[in-house]
Image (tube, rainbow, N blue to C red; front, top):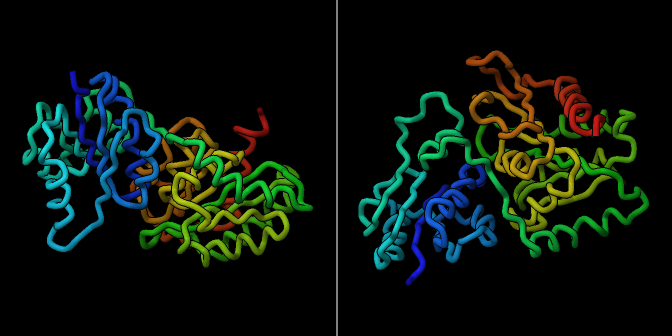
Amino acid sequence: MPAPQVLFVTSNRIGDCVISSGVIREIRRQIPGAEITVACGRPPAPFFRAAPGVVRIIILDKKKMAGHWFDLWKQACGTRWDMVVDIRGSGLAWLLSAKRRVVYNRSWETGLRKVEMVSRLMGSQTPLDPEIFLDDQARSEAAAVIDPQLADGAGPGPIIALAPIAHQPGKSWPADRWGSLVEKLKAEPRFDGWRFMPVGGPGDRPPATPALEAAGPRGIDFVGKGDILASAAAIDRATLFVGNDSGLMHVSAALGRPTLGLFGPTEWWLYGPWGPRTATVASNETRGQFAPIEDLTVDHVFEAVLRLHDDWVGKA
């Protein structure tokens, strides 16, 4: 008997793909032996190459006049799907032959965290915790960048990963403050001997430069060094993570790294990192109120990093 076929339409954004990654195992729980086709944007696509049950990845490159949806329909219309899960809430599922359709609806956005909304979509009574499906390729690619830098004169040391970029306006803490934060952490006895590793894509070099310059010989450069799964493997090598509200913040939390997310004029109580080993720091920490991320001081972030360290490293 042929294996059940499931189409999972997920986001073109890294963060949203991480948040909804628990759907993969839930599909396999509901439909044992399912072969899953994932449709997603190009940047997050590597996340799914080692995910359980995933046999195909369809890249959705956005086109004019919603042409990317027509392209996906052409690739999917020849299959009789046992289930189509669409967390983007498009009309695609209704144009395909499917025994069951699970389609996200924005009317459900009533103050629940996105992980909880996706879990309810799938009919799960408990939250579907996000998961990163690391593979040997990603670990090897990360090691090829990190290990030579750890072998230099600064010594191995624990690593604090930093993500100084967010790709939406207003979410990026000023680059020079990342440099100031590294300087303060270098002088803090708790971080004696630690290494500082900025992580990001090729376009993230300018925001990461002040942090790398401040780190000096204690810096590890993982900016533009691999795809998103290699960056995840690099973060998995870290003891702590500090980053803007971004996809990498959600990656770190899903990996179980102690994670601090920096927030400006966005809803930290809804979009903060998911999991028990996480924390947020915001320019305005009154729920329902906002301030520019530039109002977030270096001292405020520094104290939050110390609390994260003391909660999850100092007690280890």
